Image 1 (cartoon, rainbow, N blue to C red):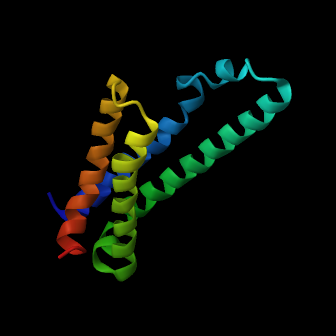
Image 2 (cartoon, rainbow, N blue to C red):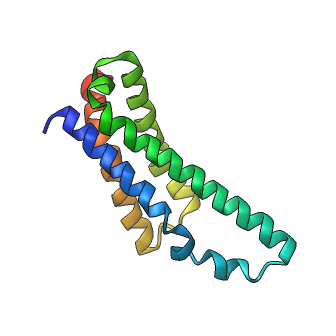
Length: 134
């Protein structure tokens, strides 16, 4: 498998991450959980949750677009290598710092999510090691 193909696989992986955010409100029962809050707090928190989720979805779309359409540039330019370094750094922080701090490692969902995230990390880490860290 070429490094360019791995970068494109990573872009597709990020697209899956983006699409998963479309289902967050239903998956995590936002409306049900918000019912218990007073009306003034409910509106503020609901708006913040949906806005944050929309921004995160946009972030994932950007992180999928660049690798899918600019994989050659990612591997061959300074800017591309910087983007690759930032993606690898993002996944390292997400998996090894944020996941353990904010998620319960005793649950099955934690380990499924961690394995899923590790896949995304590895598909970008392999080209990063070969191109940037050499």
